Image 1 (spheres, rainbow, N blue to C red):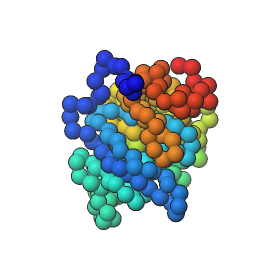
Image 2: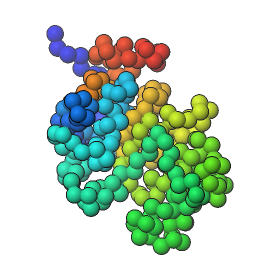
Image 3: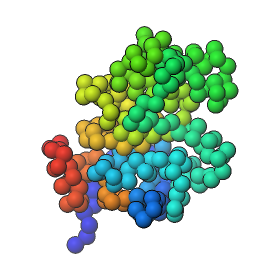
Image 4: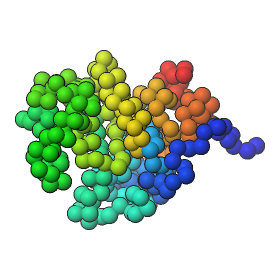
Length: 262
């Protein structure tokens, strides 16, 4: 029998343009442990790709390989058709093109929300302080925190800190946004406010790769969902396939363990 072919009336978003990111047989080892075992994948312009799967299956490792926070043991990652460089000076330039939001907020505790957001444009992009603060203020307004511009991280909730972290990443005007389980460290009542900002970015056409355990977000916001297991891709496809009609029993089992019922 032929393998099941996902049925969708919608072409994959951005399929008519060259992909923004391409992973070619990416391998990553930690000693004898195989974290990524020959991952091949592409991310299209304007696409929201969600990476799901059990903890330790390689999702976050792939994200860290995307902007060269981890070195590859095989294969390559291409950004706009060009392989990621290995020289540190060139790697820094690539990272400027990708905003990354981590599980932990990693804000500077001694700086206000406004200064946290303005710092990157000033120190990395060489923007003058006045212009950087104007940009930072606009971004804080975008994430709903204009009234908290003068607050220090200790005086912000977890959800507010993560929204500042998103604004800080956006301040560099990235081409791609990488989110590594951005809501996993948050109280349940603040998860929604962060996901709402991410949905807004998706609607604006930002290219996004999101490692998440928030299945509702992946189902409603993603254009493409990739299921990982044991450092490899188990299956990939549009959300309608992955959540409503997965081709792999293991995918069904994973979603079932999460209590997913659509």
